[in-house]
Image 1 (cartoon, rainbow, N blue to C red):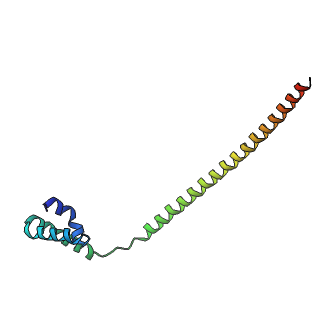
Image 2: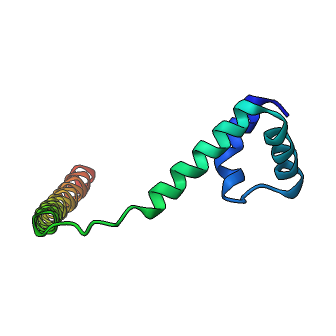
Image 3: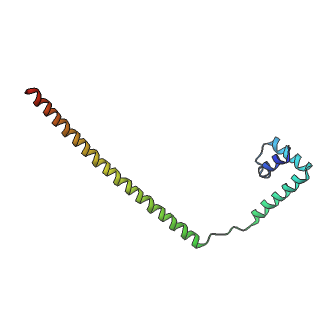
Amino acid sequence: MNCNTVSIYMIDFIDNKLDNNTSHEIAKHIEECPSCKIEHTQTKELFSSIEKMPLKEPGAGLKMSFNEILEKEKAKQKAEQRSSETKTIKLKNYRILWQAAAAILLLVSGYLAGYKSKY
């Protein structure tokens, strides 16, 4: 095991997310390598200090900003939905017009074809 590999797996090693074989190899390397031992100690200390930090509650302004953004997004989605519904209605109207035009064209063509065959 080399230092680069140990460095890559350091966080997973500390969190006990590695298989037993890999974990054992890394532990052995850390015991033998002074620089990796320092990195291991520093990383553990960093995690420990992060865990000890108090959680801050978000302020009322953040919650209000989030709610405003959420309402704007909802309004935007409703507007897009209305727009797509309007387009659908327009397309349906055009479809009906095309169908009516095709029916009239067929009737006129049939009438003219029948009229020509009589004379």
